[in-house]
Image (tube, rainbow, N blue to C red; front, side, top):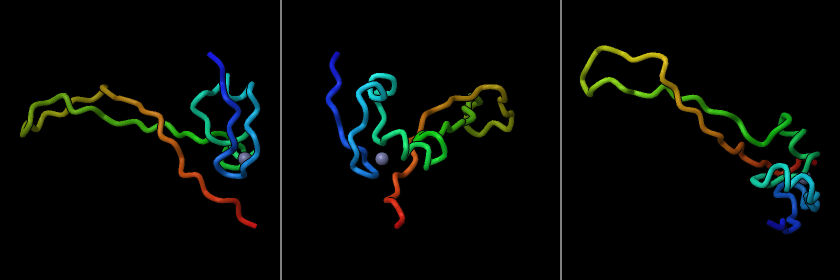
Length: 77
Ligand SMILES: [Zn+2]
């Protein structure tokens, strides 16, 4: 699979091919990812409801995680 060079969604700089290969989902360059706290993603953990509707019994211990993209803010001058 070849990766097309693509511009950073935040500063417009070309994202290095190596970064795209390592992190194909990325939309920002290394510099901007660092400015966003090290990564453009955060992990959201949701407790899954496995108990029946209307049941008061709660089921703990079942969680699902998903990767959420942080909002990409324009660079402040
Ligand atoms: Zn950038």
